[in-house]
Length: 387
Ligand SMILES: *[C@@H]1O[C@H](CO)[C@@H](O)[C@H](O)[C@H]1NC(C)=O
Ligand SMILES: *[C@@H]1O[C@H](CO)[C@@H](O)[C@H](O)[C@H]1NC(C)=O
Ligand SMILES: *[C@@H]1O[C@H](CO)[C@@H](O)[C@H](O)[C@H]1NC(C)=O
Ligand SMILES: [Zn+2]
Image (tube, rainbow, N blue to C red; front, side):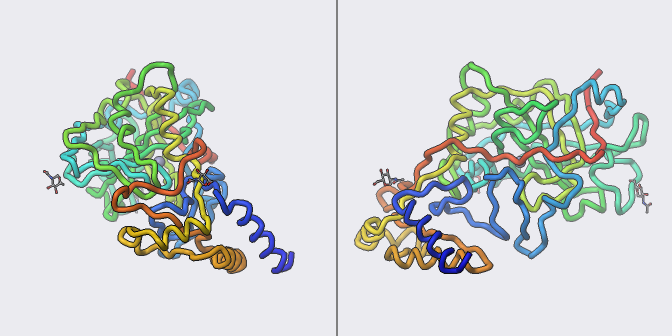
């Protein structure tokens, strides 16, 4: 195809959505999220994740052999293989309530997920078994290869954030769930290999029922921002009952895996709780709207209004406004032919001082933010279950 033809097609595509374009979650021109490294989104559920991080290091999503998520085998398959974590070596979770003082706990929409973060010294933790004697290369996943009666020690894993995926990333015996919660923990003690930080994630699945909202989830979902790159402070006194978000019966399946988003780094110790929690239809729909597809307008008239309006330049100085349609076409065309892709669109209408949350994109379709299940490639997968 000639360069001229390519330009024409791009121009036509743009003209086709000059009034209102539909963007996937993670790509909205209205987003306040910042990206480091190559851009990515969930539109192909991870199948196209080839790129580099901010430091130029290639992602391992397509090349790694120990990727997450996986399809978790049925209990009886693991039982028959004797693939069990001895009771003395099982991970233990201790989570007091996470309580906001008004500014210390945030619910963030980062354009890839809805995430909860905190700025105070939360006391929650998990403890993970390691061998009593270890060397500089003993990994955090060593518990997978330990046996009942082995002399052991424990490391403390401190939660750093938690976030959600819809639908679930892990499958239980082939079954997909509407939601999965990931509690991300960091380990920095005892093991030489964890000096720079090792990670362990606990995954909790949610199944859909016709009951009322799950109040434990509601403490978070009631404050879920729908605009990418923004956050909400949880009101003072709001408590997130993390211990109750874990199922009462803490049976889990554990294996060595990876981050489920770029750069897909491996060496993580995964725990997937095998007893699902519950989510209401209303909550599932609201979550999917927050990670939904957005319609954004890019009109000449709107650009003019922006120029004429009294309040615009206070809030988003960093956004370059496009003054006319021709300039926009030119930018799109040049982005299409240059090797380095760059953002195609700029936001046209801005929030005002009176209404800082007003924005020109609106959610028009339910979304999803999960990565497809990956091959197990013969990995050790063990069940931890009280007899
Ligand atoms: C809330 O917690 C944050 C982080 O620990 C602290 O900086 C801030 O002073 C606290 N605010 C109030 C009102 O206690
Ligand atoms: C270090 O310990 C691991 C088990 O944690 C073992 O597999 C490995 O062989 C040991 N390496 C050395 C150099 O001793
Ligand atoms: C975009 O413009 C159309 C036509 O004016 C309007 O119906 C629609 O609501 C607008 N969408 C947004 C997100 O402002
Ligand atoms: Zn996750």
